[in-house]
Image (cartoon, rainbow, N blue to C red; front, top):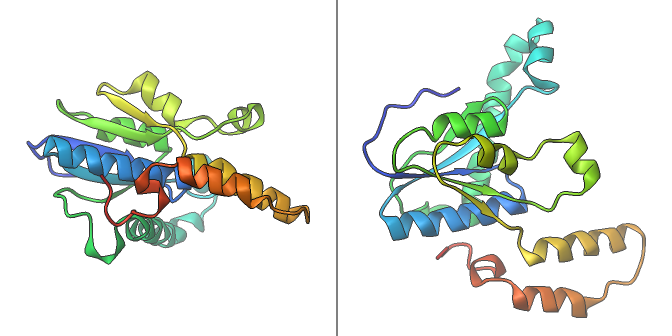
Length: 196
């Protein structure tokens, strides 16, 4: 995990993976940090392919760690650019990459009085819950600080439906997409460079 010098300021830590849900959580976290006068700490947690146990068994994995770290850093920077553009967050704080499972890494970093942890709470079916544990549930159960679980954007479901229909060669009903777009909050509809 990344070592960070302690800062006395209040922090809003946010889990970022590059998924639509994490980008929505990043917008919400930036707005919360502005309102509270806190620092914004976007965190991308990463693991070697197959997890740490698999990496420990493979001798070549030690040579690939810098490549995996660089990839994680690039994903974090891309997510920040997607939300804030090239102007940056406009907030004090640090962007971090942390090695480990996302839930554990976020809970370990959110260890100070005054910290707030923001995570995306994506839609999860039974199959996904069984195959991949929820980062949001882990953080809600284990964090010592307040946790904000940001629900997915209504556009996420519309996009998933459009992708499925396109993959199956079915006609796209644009009325459903337009209705989902109209019901989305302004920061999700395209004001990503100005999260409120």
